[in-house]
Length: 424
Image (tube, rainbow, N blue to C red):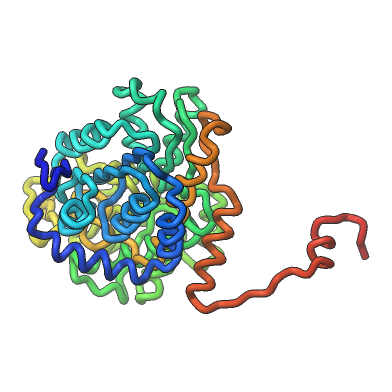
């Protein structure tokens, strides 16, 4: 750990700050809703003195969220929510220019990753912000002493919400969490359009592949899978979807995609993209039948969707052939290419979601933290959805920023929709 200008940090190189600053400013231009919230926060200071520990992907968009929280009066510390998703120049600028402590280095090993979470928790947070629930998990398992001081927390992504709802079901969750991913202005846009575009961006940057004409398998047809599948098809790929949920599989089929079991799809695909939030989606059984040169990538939160130990066991040799591309040579001479160590390819090999879509997600984050602080005495230790009024506010402000006007229901229409007395 280093201290610079009395700001504790552990980042790659503070000399990168100038580059990070201009990139943060660029992202800010495309986040008009968060800009409005920041102006409101500067004026009202609703988070005055509140200690926040944020375990998020350290990107330009996250930097603008952290600055907004700081300008609302919060005392913010940031650590990474994935070992490969940190943008080192952004981390440096947050420390050097914004005086926000950051503990994050792109490519950090597992021990360093968890040591950074420990450092963020030394802040003794009153509010937690998670992307995958690692921060809350460590509090509940190793830092229970912090629980009495915690007002509540927020969770950004699907995987984290699943983990937190499991905690609540088992009775181990000790404070309120707002599931940002539940907001319509989050998952319908961030997950679908953000993940769809950024995942293909990451794969193309890592491989320089032309998607037109490729056979692509998208594993999972949640909102992220929908986005990836539609974007791959838009680039001219032949897209197959694999699913375990019959309703989602039916949706994929009616959206015009081929739907197959993975054991069958694995035989012919050029590129595999996992976005399920589950584990062991691609296993040794599938590696055995993949064609020579198959490319395997993951855009789900954790790197367990691909059974990397099985691939390691099957391989005679492994070498890095491009940045974020590892070539595994199997015993029969076939080669399988794993991208970004099986971690989030969109954040590891590219820059993550575009700022304009994260504008909505992080506006939900900022307003939900404000809601937590204002309602601290009434919230129970359970997982809450984003309040509808926040969701609607974000949608309205986003439309206004795009210069789009919409209709408003008349009193007569509102009465009609809320009553049962009128019929045919």
